[in-house]
Length: 177
Picture 1: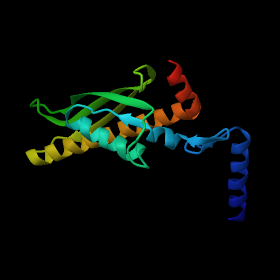
Picture 2: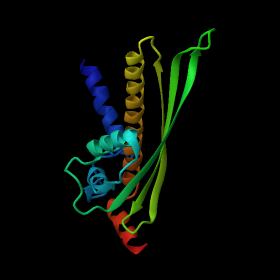
Picture 3: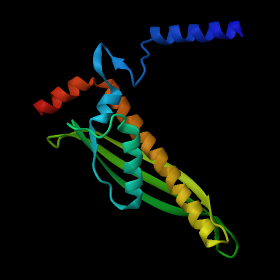
Picture 4: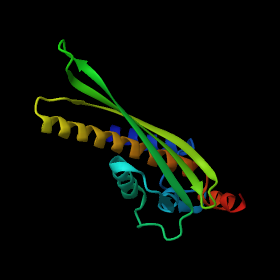
């Protein structure tokens, strides 16, 4: 057990020597963290029920200190989804479906100039049951799983963007553009 502890400690020292830094920590003496930068992004409304669910997930993940009073950027998201029959029986009925969902998102400064763009994609499958309610519940669960994955991908993508670009540089750049 002591040997494992020593190996773990040595790993942390090697990681710090290679320039590793946590995404949600402060960077280069800058007091603004990625979490603070994410909290200053206003999330525009996303159409439809799935859009509402995704927006709520993004709000939960990005607004740890509440909604931004003075936002520095706007996030807009467009969702597309498609369902495909996977398990087709001899009588042409499907027993399984696959949901493919894509979200294109854009981060713009408050002047409306795009500063970052990305895409998130998730695939979820579900069983089509004999009972209609069971199929509906299974389908809703697949949509929720796909939306959770897309929400995580968007937050991770924005976090990496803000980690690579110091938040104070982004604010200065958006003021100049």
